[in-house]
Image 1 (tube, rainbow, N blue to C red):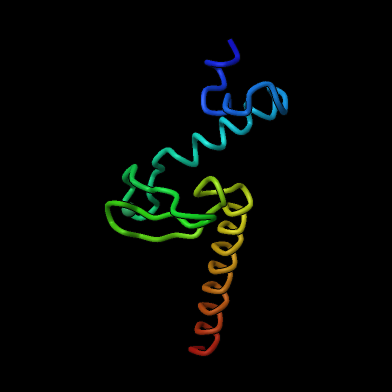
Image 2 (image 1 turned 60 degrees about the vertical axis):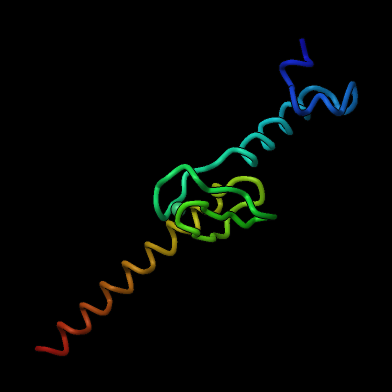
Length: 101
Ligand SMILES: [Zn+2]
């Protein structure tokens, strides 16, 4: 039964096709479900508005994806920032070492 399978997306009736409606269902479910807060690690992160997520426990307000708190691109950006920070630290250490000599 498509009606039960698509649940919330069944409001579109026979329109748009089942593939699109399944995608919508997945997106809407993650958007409504509470997600794990990166600050306190509790499942209390709620979508506030487009790209803004707020933790109901520690009140952290974070910028994330439009419908999920973390996006693959966001994680990649985080990795790049971390790598650059490490490279920066290493460069500073090297500089200090040469200054001490
Ligand atoms: Zn939190």
